[in-house]
Length: 116
Image (cartoon, rainbow, N blue to C red; front, side, top):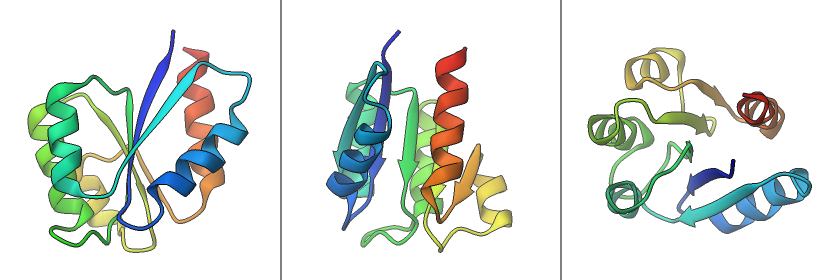
C-alpha cells in the first residue's frame, strides 16, 4: 500500500514534504504539496489522498474553512492541522484527527496509518 499525503501550506508546503520524506525513507509514501486551500479543494476532487496536512493561516480562507470544504467532498478524509493557529474547538468541529504545531505527533500518526 502506498500512502498518499497532501500538504497544504502557503509558505512551507515543499519544505514540509521534504522533511517528512526524510523521516519516511523506508516507507511507501508519496507527499504532494499545494500552496492554497482552493488548490487543495481542486486536488481532492481530482485525486485520492489518505491524509491531508493542513496549515491554518492560509491567504484566501483559513484552515478551518478549507477543512470543512474538504470534508464535504470526502467525508472520511483524514486531516491533520499543522499550525499554531488551530484550536481545540475548531479542530473538533472541522473533523480533524489531530492538530499540532510540531511534527512529532504527525510523524507518530503517520506511523499508525502505515501499521494498518
